[in-house]
Amino acid sequence: MADATIETTIATSRVPIVVSLGSIFSEAKIDLEFHTMAKRFAVLSDSLKVAFEFFSEELKLQYKPDGYRYYLTFEDTPLDFTLPVGVLFDSLATELPWSLKMHIVEKLPVKMFDYNTYEKLLNTRIKESYYIRYGKRFPGLTNEYERIIVNAAQKSDEESVREFWNCLRETFREKDIQRFPIKLVLPDQNAIPLYLKSDLCPTLASLAGAPQIPAKYRGKIGPEYTLIIHGIAPPADTPLNWLVEHFCHADGFVYIALAANGKLVSTD
Image (tube, rainbow, N blue to C red; front, top):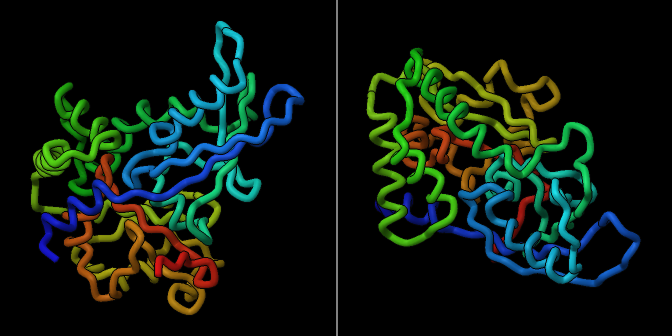
């Protein structure tokens, strides 16, 4: 498969999701479901905002100055709104479609990520991935670049996809990479930067020895866990520089899900 085809597939592939109502601020019991095809590349807050609007209309929520909040759970586990849909699915899901519950509340639980958090974090994460790559401060995004990157999570047309990859390549155009901007997403949704040196860690197999990986997972990649990137398990000899070039997200990081072998989703 040509690199351009891979990039288009990454930027446009989707996950089927069924959202049902979990707890709400009242005691009302309403049997509703919302079906959608969420972009893997997007974050949950962008993909399921329309689900919240649907439930709000069906519940006839009264106007509230501060608005209502919502959060999503999978098997009673709250989901991190700041991680891409595909990364969460690869880490946690066991079957298709992915069944989630939406909880509508007047106030989010303590330490719960607000669905407005991601856009505030995006610029910070781009700065972080830039520093990891090159060892120097990020010069800053133009307003046009910010628009293109944010739109990439919402649109799938050919022009938006092309603009997105051109934007990332212009942002990260320097070739002298010191460390690979890779985050390993654990089953508890903790995303750990690995800081792998480009001259010492040439392939995906190098991740297994990264010192940042918690002790409980060391030596278990392969026998008990599989590394999943954008829904696939690349060969262990896949070059990391190629993954960084073609598999990164809008913030410049390559997110790799550590998925338990017994929970891998079959798409046959």
